[in-house]
Image (cartoon, rainbow, N blue to C red):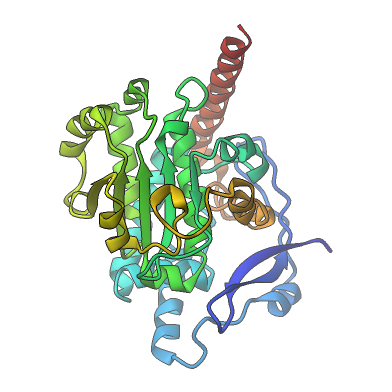
Length: 346
C-alpha cells in the first residue's frame, strides 16, 4: 500500500516522517474531495504516537480539543496532535480559546476558499521558483524561523493576491509543523527593494480585510515583522495599509531601512546572508531553501481534503452553493492564468 509521510517531531525537536495511509484525491460530482478510508486495523497500526506521553495535563487538553473539532461541523477537519498543539500553544493551552480560533479560521476558509491552498504542491512550483517568499535554514537569535518576503520579485501581471496568500500558507505550514517554532514564533523579514508601484493594486479593501483576518487567526503566538530597504513606494503602501491593520500586527512591525545593526539587534547575524550584513553565506541558496518545502509534497497533498470533504453522513446538497463557488473560483483562476499567459506571449 502506498504511504504518505506526515511530519512528527523527534525528541530532539526535529521533524521525522511518520507514515499514514495514502489519500486518493479527486473531485466528485458535488465538487468535494474524496479520500480512501483505511480499515480500522490500519488506523490502529499507523496512528502516530502522542506528542506529550509523559504530560497527562497537556495530553488531556489535546484530546479535549480534538473532540470539539471532530464535532464542530459537517466537514472533515485535521485533528492530529501536531496541528491541534499549534492552536493550544498560541492560546496558552486554553482549550476554549483554541477552539474558537480554529472555528473562526474554518469559517474564513469556508467563506473565502480562493484564499486557501486548494491544489497539489506541484501546481505551485512556478510560483515558488519566483523566490518571492521562502524560509531560511537557520533560526534567529530568539529561536524563531525567519520567513523572508522579497517584494521586488512580485509580478502583478503573473500572479494574483490569492496566489501570494497560498504561498504564505504553504510556508507557514512548513514552519508550524515543528514544536520549536510553535513555542518561539516566526520573524518575517520583508525586503522592499525593487518594490513596484504597480503592486499597490493588490491593496484593495477586500484583499486587505481577508489577508489581515487570515494573519490574525494563524496559530502563531509570536510573530514579528522586520521591514528593510523601504522606499517612497513603501511609504505610499503603508499610508494605505496601516489604518486597516489590527493593533496586534501594528505593534509587531519594525522598520530598519538599511540599518543592519538595527536588524541584527533583533534577529542576529548568524542566520542572515551577507546581503543583510550577516554571516550565513554570500547570497541566498534559493534551490536549497525551496527544496525544504518541495520535499514534503506528499504531506501537503494529503491535507487537501480538510475543509472540503464532507463527513459520510452529510447530504452534499446542503453545501451545493459552497462547492459551486469553489469550482467557479477555480474556473476564474484558469481564465486569469490563460489571459496572463497570452499577455506574456504578446
